[in-house]
Length: 262
Ligand code: SF4
Image (cartoon, rainbow, N blue to C red):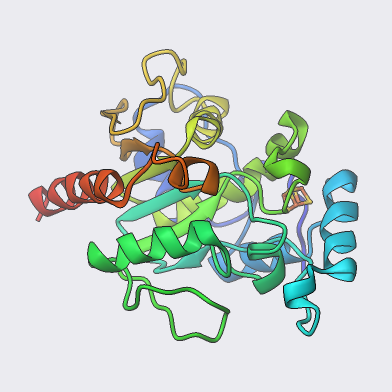
C-alpha cells in the first residue's frame, strides 16, 4: 500500500469532486494521491506520522481502562465511517482514548457517541440510536463521519502539527465523498476543515466563517454549505451547553437544506 502524502495530483486519477471544486479557484488544489476511498482508509489505519500520538494511542491500548480490561483495544487511527455517497459529511475533532481508540470506529463506545448517534437516528441519518462496537449493525444513510485528527490525543488536544499531518486524509475523503453539506463539530474542527480548503486555494481566508453553534455559511463557488455545532463532548453535554434539542435543530436545518436541492 502506497501512502506517500507529499505528492500532488498528476499521474493519479482525481476523485470525483476535485474538478467541480477547482472551478471556483485560481490555485490548483492539492491532495494526496489516493486511488480509492478504501485505499485512503487503509493508509489512515496504518499511519504512524505523529510520534506523540502513536505512543499515546498504543500505551492506552496496552494499559486499558479497568471497565474494558477484557477487551482488545484497536490502538490505531480511526478511519472515516459511513455512506461513501453521502451528501452530508460530519467533521469531528479526534477519537477518544477509550472510545474510538478502543473500538476502531468514529464516536463509538463513548458518551459523545451515545449523544451523537441518538440524534442522528432521530434525524434519519442512522439506522439505530446506539454505537457500541464495529459489529453492532450501525449503518449511516447519506452521512459520512470523519475528523481532523485520526488518533486519540492526550487530554483530547491534538497539536497543530498533528492536525496538519492528518489533513491530507481529510482532503482526500472530502474529494471522494463530495458532500453537499459539511457539519463541523466545535471550533477546532471548523478551523481544521476551513484550513484544509484554504491550503488548497478553495477559500482565501477563514475570517468570514467564525465558529458559532447553529451557524451556517455559503462558501465560494460550488463548495458544500458549512454548518457548525458544539462538539458533543461530555464537557458540553453534561453541563447543558449542548442539549439534544439544540443538536437536533441543527440536523433539521441541514436536512431542510439537503431537501431543497432535490
Ligand atoms: S493523527 Fe493522523 S497523521 Fe498523525 S499518526 Fe494519526 S492518522 Fe497519522
